[in-house]
Amino acid sequence: AQSVTQLDSQVPVFEEAPVELRCNYSSSVSVYLFWYVQYPNQGLQLLLKYLSGSTLVESINGFEAEFNKSQTSFHLRKPSVHISDTAEYFCAVSDNRANNLFFGTGTRLTVIP
Amino acid sequence: GAGVSQSPSNKVTEKGKDVELRCDPISGHTALYWYRQSLGQGLEFLIYFQGNSAPDKSGLPSDRFSAERTGGSVSTLTIQRTQQEDSAVYLCASSFSGGPPDTQYFGPGTRLTVL
Image (cartoon, rainbow over all chains, first blue to last red; front, side):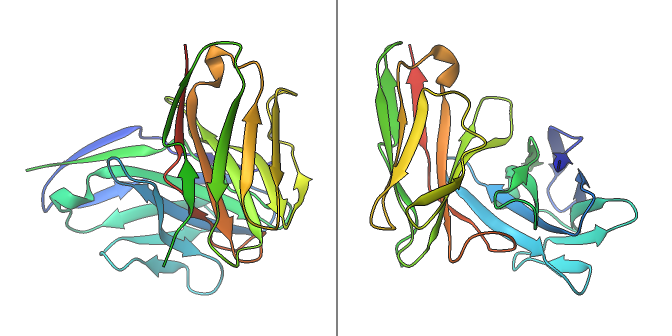
């Protein structure tokens, strides 16, 4: 069965510093990988996704994630964070054996002024 | 355009009572999902609809939980004889055709508190 591990439950980082939110998954078949973001008092929004092709995917607000099959990872990075990036970030995986998404437990990113 | 909507946004109930949670998916989306987000845990899959059929109910935690979908649109999640451990945020999502790698669009959720 699929599973997703987000090792860091909370990540504090100063404004304009770089950040990496880690995500590892387990699946024995080809996977699709997603990062969702939940801003305070808002619903989940898709940030970016990997389906196939280039292993590096980017979002419109400067985040990027790289699919690493050998490491079974899909870490999320941003070179310079803003206060507005403060949110909870969820990594999720799906594959062709199930219709639903399997989510990690989330990482709360807090950007410190 | 309208996104996924859910009602009520908050529900407080007493242990043992039944509750109904409603989800209106994005128009034209054939697939609909229910998830549960408990404190300190990730999102837990409950049930998946394709049209009005539920081919995957594997995530429903007990027979107190049931869901239906009518007209290929609105869905209702019913919890009978609620227990305190049912307290959570219940999220609904919809996607255009269902299954991976379709993007799922989430509603704002219903926060259920069982006293």
